[in-house]
Length: 217
Image (tube, rainbow, N blue to C red; front, side):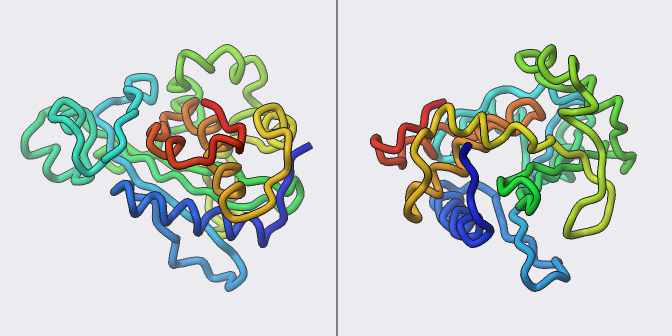
């Protein structure tokens, strides 16, 4: 089993945010958490598609210097997208929080169309990436459901953390022991749980990791 404490989770998140800033990625610390001891980092992305399965895999390192074809696929400014394109966009707000009951990170997210209408759970299930569709939908109520966000108190979609520790242990047999390996832990976890719901992590994050960490993607 590969679990981390809450203090280790905070260290991993802060280290991850430093990399995000370096690469021009848009992960940020959520500032509206009322619980002073609560920590949540999040990323918002606007995608010109109606379902997650249309999202292409982003593997470039300098996200703020992407090629033109990638900028056509995804933009940080939805108003600009509507100005220059007739295609509707969907906004995804991904949150990383800590599960006290499972001692692992958990991915929560919400998504809504350009009209403001929230995606339903059926929409989210339908949009699961084709690579992971069979695995998740075979146990959809135990894998991807809607529940109350532990820090915001509002309904969010959640990838259930019950098997997280076992999955992480398969790629990180040694427990994290310092800031660098905690960062690797979070990156490996995100590379597993992000793609099924349209959240890809660029390969440049992995290039930063110590080759001895054993993290693979």
